[in-house]
Image 1: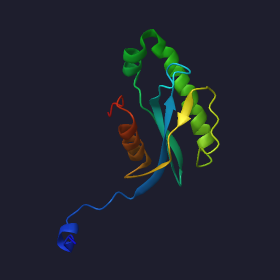
Image 2: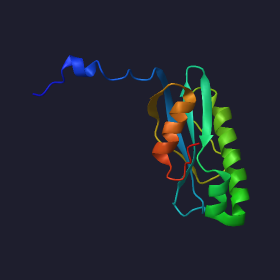
Image 3: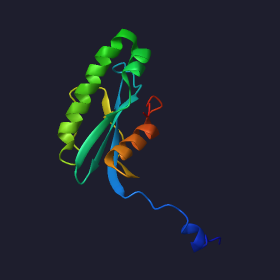
Image 4: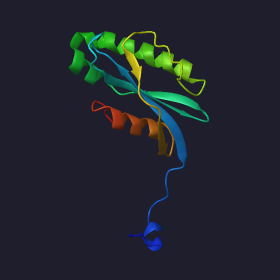
Length: 132
């Protein structure tokens, strides 16, 4: 069995110290189609929760044209609802104000902050996410 010598392990940087759990929020752009896109991610830690939208205004325009404005409003409605319900520390009984909204599995993340976990989550779940 191969083992890694401790001197090599000692050279690795320490793991980030901030732990949070997160979920992706998916929406069907065409109701009933079964097609889903990641519109946001939400992260929970001991201090609360935050969400990060994965589609910028320019991406929404590129994907949906004039309908991008309406899509943005629907995303805002869903994210605001998730944040209100997420103040309890989870979304186990999430009730979306719109149909065609689905939650991804609960996953664990490590970073230097909750926003770092959100950025990782967005990068892992959305090909449309633009990291600033």
